[in-house]
Image (cartoon, rainbow, N blue to C red; front, side, top):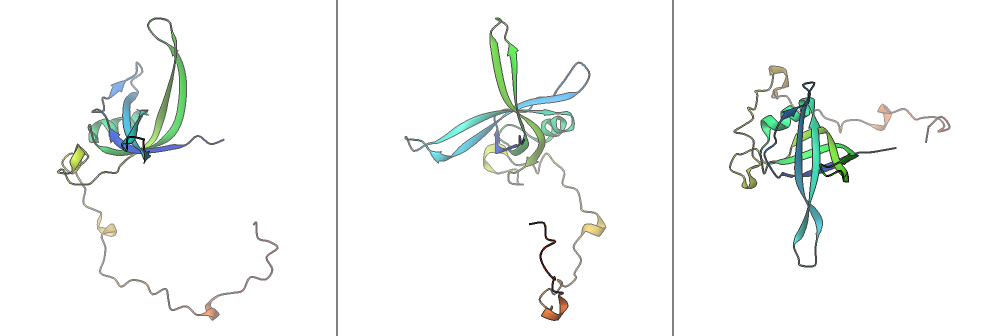
Length: 158
C-alpha cells in the first residue's frame, strides 16, 4: 500500500505554532494549489489543501514561512472523523507533512511574499564543501578495452 502526496503552492495565512497538552509542537496550515487546467471561464481553479505539521517540521514552518510563501509539502493523506459542537459527525481530510521545503525565489522583493532571504540566514558553506579550482574529470577517455563483458545474463534479476 502507498499513501504519499506532494503539493506545492502558497500559504494562505501565517503559520501559527501551537503545543499539545504534552508539549508536542503542531502547526495547521493551508496551501493554495492551482490546478493544471483552466475552467470554462478561462480562469485557473485553486484547491485549498489543509495540512498539519508536527514537532520539528511545525517549528520550522512557523519560524521561516509566512502568508504567501511558496512551499512544497510531502506527506500522507489522513482522514479523521470527529463530532462538532452541535453533535454532528464530521470528516476532515488533511495532508500530514513529513517534509516541508522552500520553493520560492530567494530574494525579498519577489511577488507574493514568498522570499526568505530576509528571514533565513544563509550560512557559509564549510571549507571542505567550497568549490576548489580543480579541472573537471575527463570521462570520455575510456576505451572498449576498459570494460569486461558479462558472460550470460541468466543471473540478472530482470
